Image (tube, rainbow, N blue to C red; front, top):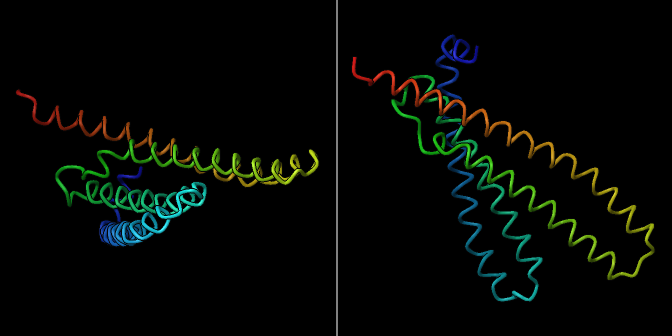
Amino acid sequence: MLKKCIEANPAKFAMYAKVATIIGWVILIAAGVMLLPTIFQYYRIMRHWSRFCQGIIQIINPIFFGMVFLLLAQFLKYELGLDKQPGWFFRNGCIILRCDAALILFIIIFQCVLMIGSLVRSNGPLGDIFLAFFSMSLFYILQIAEMALLLGLAEVTKMMMAQIRKDQETQFAPQ
C-alpha cells in the first residue's frame, strides 16, 4: 500500500525526501556545533555531573532526531528508485532507532533518580515525594510512548531491510 502511494505521487515524495535530507543534516550539524562548547563548558565544572549529563543529553537527543530524518529521506529515495542501494542511515535504521529508545529510557531513569534525590535531600514529607513522583510519571508516559513507537519503527525497518536483502539476493542469484 505504501509503495502504491509513493508510486502514485513520485514528485511529492521526492520533494519530501529532499526536505527530510536538508532538515536531517541541519539538525545533525547544529547539534554537533552545540556539542563541542557544551562538553568544554561542563568539563571545567565536572563536579556538577548532573548538569553535565543533562547538557549532553539535550544535544544527543537532537542528533538522533536528525538521524531519523535522514533515515526517512533515504527510505523515500530508495522506494522512489533514486538510489540503487539503501543509504547508511536506512541500512542501520534499526540500530539508530533502538539507540534512541535506549537514550529515552536512560533519560527517564536519570530524571527519576535526580528528582527523588533532590526530594529526599529536601527532607520533605513522604507524601510530597510521592506526589511529585506521580505527577512526573504522567510526563514519563509520553516518553514511554515515544520509546515504544521508536522500537516499533525499528522492527519495521529491520523487516524492510530483510526483505530488501532477500529481493537483492534473488535478483542477482544465478539462473
